[in-house]
Length: 300
Image 1: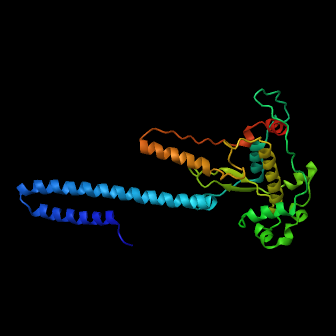
Image 2 (image 1 turned 90 degrees about the horizontal axis):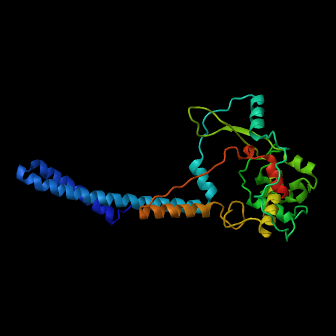
């Protein structure tokens, strides 16, 4: 690898500093003052060049990582944050069930909240919700965009099988039924829980967390339903896409917001201004919101 002009000059300055240092050791008292001043000038020049070189390398590295993130945000984030999870979860079934009950239950879930003046009226939808049986194209689109590495459900069939075997992509096989009754939806929503310890623990304490990956076939069904619901919301202008980016087709999820924040931070650095960035995250969001409020919002 060839050195650039700045790196070559840094090497030259190092050699000159060493030569001046040797001369300083052999010089008399009258010469030492001038040699010491010359060495200080050379060192300052070298330090400035080294600082500029570090900035150049950091800028190049940031650009490389930014390009990797834009090309594949999931892969870049996984490579950055993924690692061996620390610790083991040691708990009985009774404790786990109690944890789930306390975390996700709402003792007042059937209590009527009354009227809320802050809920704005919305016009009647111009485009109705698609309630037809899932089509083969909808199933194929979901399977095509799904990750092959996704964990399969209790049936043991991963997405890779659906990708490689087109005969599995029939609407009835992939969605198990058209599911027009609520009882059928509840049956499809059945899932298994996977408990694990969080990767970063303070003082060795292990926090129980949960994740519910449904079967791949159920993932296909609910992915289709989610797409239809999103289309229904956007087609009727029920979602303000200038604010809400996640889960909306045509937007790069959080990339736009991240780019704006990165630009603001860069401008604050260049202009030497103060900037405060606050990240908000709701702990146990579903467990802290009244379930009746969610029901009323869906009905509304």
